[in-house]
Image (cartoon, rainbow, N blue to C red):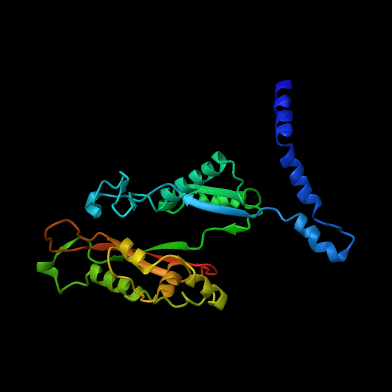
Length: 295
């Protein structure tokens, strides 16, 4: 115990100027509670650092060379333009590692963090965030209490459409034009959900989106992300908007609908004239603040 106290007292002696300086800053605030004119100074005395909750996930989706990867997706590669390519480099291991290394840099350089950080890292995001809802509920009045800012801006709802027809797969040379084909029905349903320009055709989807204010719109004009950078990310000029401000808003403040795939469809190399008996289409809607998925 004596050794521990000695270490403590040594710290106090070595940092006395810093400790006294901190007290000096507090004394300099005239927080006279009996004077109504100085009530704001009382509030300033209790103006602590803001709390920011950072959410990230460290699990990833499947990745194969046959998906279009130019290199092993689980081997991080640095491209000539400086980009780092690998499964999870962006979504979302890059963020997990980036935040941890940021903290490490602050600590090693003895720089005080300007805010309080609360982290929520999970490993089941790509499977529907199994267990996360319970954690959030359990910690709502504890770990998450007093959070001033949360960096989550977009939510997601994942859906599937099942279409069945005949009891078994059929040959199109025998039954083509004779039966209602589940694949045709499904593709029409999926195509009707969203226009090629991104407009969602589900009634009410945009009704809950917060109206754009002049103040918010100004923030998009000051962002450094360029159209060229976006085109480099997607590998060509296939962006839906010409105006950069509109592109930025569609990335974060407006909902979007994406079609992801079809189970039961033939996808192997070569030809197979099959009429699938049952197919399942998968799509998701990215929701934005103020949207209630249930309604």
